[in-house]
Amino acid sequence: MGVPADRWRANRSVRVLADREAIFAAAAAEWTAQAEAAIAARGQFKVALAGGSTPKGLYDLLAGPVGANLPWDKTFFFFGDERHVPPDHADSNFRMAQEALLSRVPVPGENIFRVLAEETDAHIAAAKYDEALREFFGRVHFTVPRFDLILLGMGPDGHTASLFPGSSGLAEEDRWVIANWVEKFNTWRITFTYPVLNAARCVLFMAAGADKAAMLHTVLDTLEDDEAPMDEFPSRYVRPAHGDLIWMVDAAAGLQL
Ligand code: 6PG
Image 1 (cartoon, helix red, strand yellow):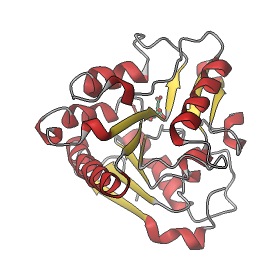
Image 2 (image 1 turned 180 degrees about the vertical axis):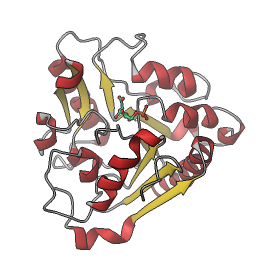
Image 3 (image 1 turned 60 degrees about the horizontal axis):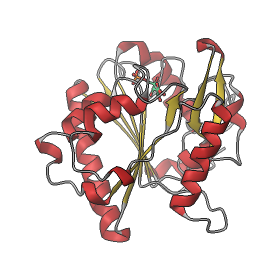
């Protein structure tokens, strides 16, 4: 999965920052750098947002003065995963991003690609999103879509996006978006798979809180151990083949590093 550890070491960084606010400021600076580089090189900035609660602080910051001069008209938004709920549901990652960022910046509506998670069948929602990626990125020999930036979080159990320990989605190597059954929540989720995550030019993890310290140590300590069990801590398998991997964590989450 991913690139062999010895070829991979060079393009990763782990930054332990004072607190969540410091994470958001550093992440906003990285977002800005990635956006400027992408637009200079390709005329577009293709970003996949993370869900959960941590990224909300970054989205809120980007919606303010920090993001005032960002090229929103050239920014294209996707979602690394989505809960199997309608877009106005309290658990919707789209709703969180819409309220914290997308409704507050001048991004054209046609630049926002949400998961149609209101579909009663999660597999249909996933297939439609997979098709949306193929349409947007083009069908060039089915080359895996290469995002300029993918934001991710990590749960205390080591999951990222909606790739949870023990879930079948961990083994997916062909499809780009799948419906993944999450036993612990007794629900379907729609999620990017590792091929898409590991094709990114830059993956930026944000993790905060003491409840993540033990798992963070395990994940980062085994990043270069190709023999580590595959499905115990999914975040460790996010190792971009030709991109940067950046972990931004607060002091509490980084306590065991
Ligand atoms: C989701 C996210 C999920 C999240 C982690 C961490 O849909 O919930 O994709 O992977 O990033 O659960 O969540 P917090 O950042 O809120 O701790």
